[in-house]
Image (cartoon, rainbow, N blue to C red; front, side, top):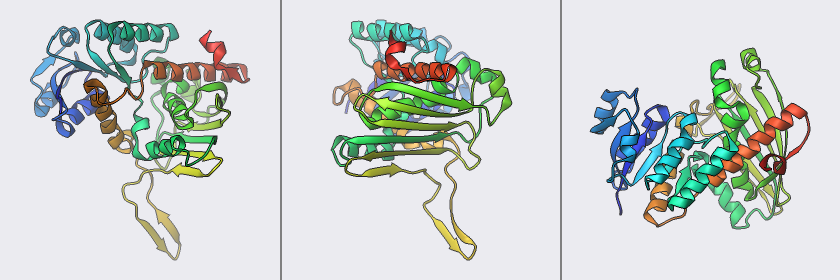
Length: 337
């Protein structure tokens, strides 16, 4: 098995998670040579055995030994770093979003194409074993023709209001995962979006010009329909469920809990609440997506989700914003023009 020499850009929460997965769960596939972050916790890096700790990510890009980079920096740096990494000939894994500007995403696509390198985008939910099983049942025809895709995605608690503006709002920060999942499960592109929203959780979010509760209806190119419901606060935990209903049957993926136990007593039947935090809920998915990245870089597999997929998710998000603002269905062709 080919061991890929890797550099990690960004050592925030997701950067540390990815680095730890490479080091402790995939040591035969990856060698983490260096990590760059001006605010890095050096004690953490030492515990992980990372000996080259840098402040400037460009030192990673200029290192000829490094074959691949993981871009886990703040979102507004992703596009610039993708283009620079492509020009340096590095294979790229980049967290979502690639960018919030459509033209900038297209520049990233062109840069990767020109350099002849891959760029996998971190839509980790595609790699959840349960969601992947639903997708498999669509592809192998078990469900027949997809008719309805339903996605429930509710966070356990809202982010700070000051985070909202820099994130692009609920549709480009939170629902962007669901937009990608909708395309993934329907095995089809989205053609039309109709979004409605309200501020029901935190008035401060509304003061930032965003909503915290939303319903989004989708029309797919293959004729299927989709519906996504979002909330910034589910008091019972991180609510992540999907369903595909087709001409031959229906399949659901339910929430993950700490255990699968159910208590039955005189007062009722009680099961456990969903896992509270996204890092717990999608722990295996984060590992699986990096295994897929290794396969793509080493030539034993295809890139499962690239910058074009990142572009499609942002286009849907932009259409949802326009739909909410104008209170009408919006075709993606209006946004892509």
